[in-house]
Length: 175
Image 1: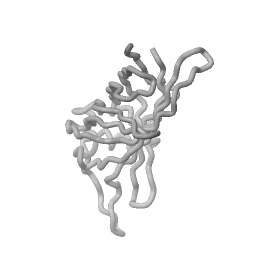
Image 2: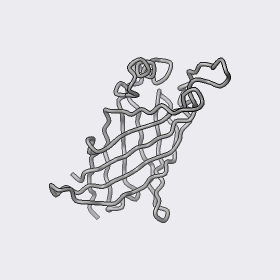
Image 3: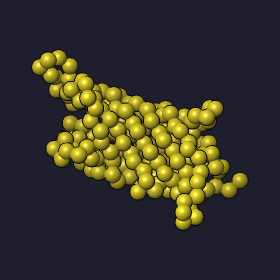
Image 4: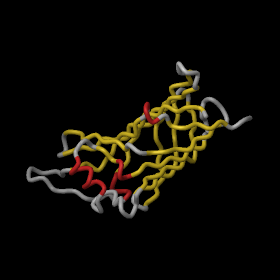
């Protein structure tokens, strides 16, 4: 069977996340500069080879001061660890759902994660390009990767939640 290469269509994709702020609301952010190498042997992406990286300096939460703090040694330490990376070890189908398993590296720490993934199918765009859609979600605990900074609140609790909810919308284009 032939191997097909895919690329992320960055104009129709988003690498997003949410974190609790002050224990009761979410702050959303995204990475604006990223790249991936994706190869698959069939059109359903089962067991596709996926390698992804995002530039930490491209983090955007719509607040420059917060973005700079996230890039600092208190969080991502972009000066010493300029990229986050993910290398899939499997993408398996279970009924209509998929599970993406792989090694996520942040701040020099690599951990295996399992992320629920929805495959939206294939479609031709108006210009004849074959596109595929993936929605990857899940939750990680930032402290497992050494992103430990926090501040206690006067009323109890902490400023930044430990859990990071992932919301990754990918539109892929067949090369």
